[in-house]
Length: 69
Image 1 (cartoon, helix red, strand yellow):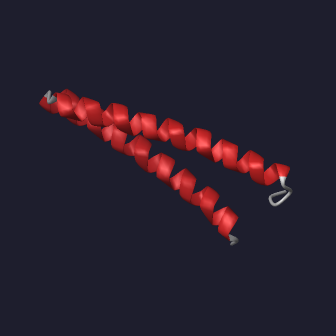
Image 2: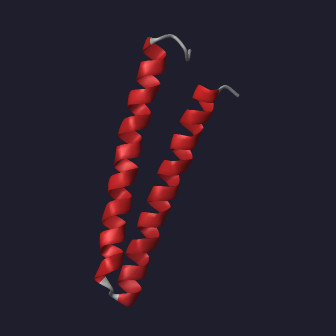
């Protein structure tokens, strides 16, 4: 696996981890009612969105440079 392919896989796993952390924070906020978990959920979902945008940008760049087919 090339470094560029590993980079894409790493971005996907990081996005899934951020989404999972956000879902966990929402669940704990509903159970405990502590507002810090809601802030953590918002931060996690924002990070996931940023990772998705970055992943799409990186993939398009590699496709444009014809590094990835």
